[in-house]
Image: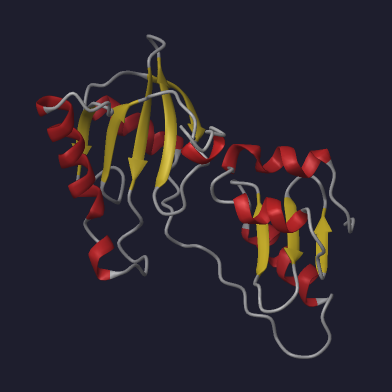
Length: 209
């Protein structure tokens, strides 16, 4: 583990700019703790009272998380360190996604890629055998601890996308299928049009714009 960052670390965060916008800023400043292997793990902490930020690859295992905990713990003397790991994102298998697309007659899946932006729902870019790509959005698992108003957000989101698409000229994705049965994907989800674009924060608009 090194105690400096370079272009390799910033490239790791490129696919998740929104979630790790603050982490990018902290890495560029003075850090009390800074550890990275430049591949699968970045740990940094600025001065108190700011929290410890940990980035791991999307396929991080329990062993990877334990290593992050131990590496961080070894940098402090005395006291325990409490780590909070997000449990809201549903980790869908490729088999589940293929079955879902087949059940709703969307297409035969040939490729699945995780979409990095976003902090609450899981999102995947799913490509079918005709070359068409779709966005699959999955709500947090039933046992995830979320605020009460967040529990049925997926149903509301899909409904309003459909309303806007059918009844207004607002640019928004078309919803091809919604599934709230939890029979295949064990959480609410919907399949929608994949729209290319950039997050608002990445557009570098002028003050006038």
